[in-house]
Length: 114
Image 1: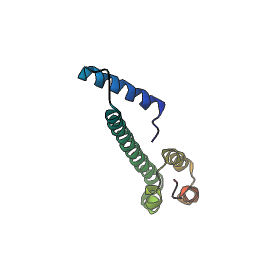
Image 2: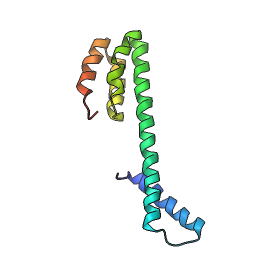
Image 3: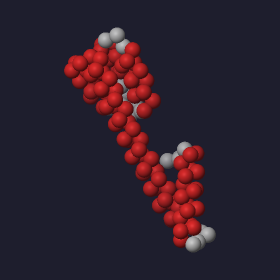
Image 4: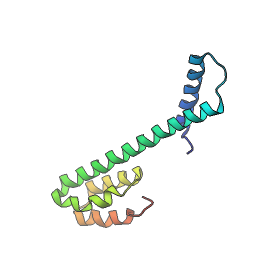
């Protein structure tokens, strides 16, 4: 996984702090790799949590607009993994004239890559 620039900077700062705490000027490749893995795992967990929140928010919007009938799209919503797609669908959920129109749009995003 390639870290975004912001996280790469945080990693460098963390390594510098780690060196200061240990009173060393050197961090082995093994230590760097372990620190990077930890950061990547936290990033992945954060993304997964964000996706879960977006999914639930989308379902909440749909239930508020279309009532219990919105539950019929839950499976398709739960299959989505892209924050960008979920954000677009939240906008669509607010703007769709009815649940059928939203479902038609949802089907265009319902693929394994999403």
